[in-house]
Image (cartoon, rainbow, N blue to C red; front, side, top):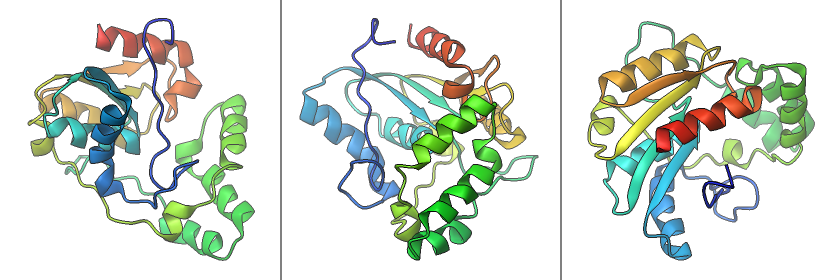
Length: 210
């Protein structure tokens, strides 16, 4: 999408090259800090998974300059007809705390959220080599986003998920539609739609930002 937009990707607190400790509750404000630091006055915001929850929470504050919002597989706090999916954070934190990073990474690769085609799992394995589990050892404050929060979003917003994503994530898309968002499902996309179906994901994002 770089021929259409100036793309800015951020390492979230507790991840990658970010020096700040994990603190999910602070991340919606981080979006405003990044745009201010870069001198960006108008912007679109795209978030995947937890980043999607952060994007929803940021948009709910009705920030000046935000023009379009797209979230993919974003979790929210809502009573749904299908069982909530969970990540065994405590089980993963134990080996991370003990410095057994290989064991921690294997637990992630065994989790359904990382399921996908062999090439997708290979990409996930490569990404996990740079993941040290800081957010598991010191998770910081949680962030909760409810349908009522979503209803405060004033900009044009779209919620997407892979058509082969988990039942719970697809149910969240329906709930976000009831909260006023446009919605859609990415053809051929699974839990990690940008990897499972990169071209289709890009097309869906571009259409939502039009």
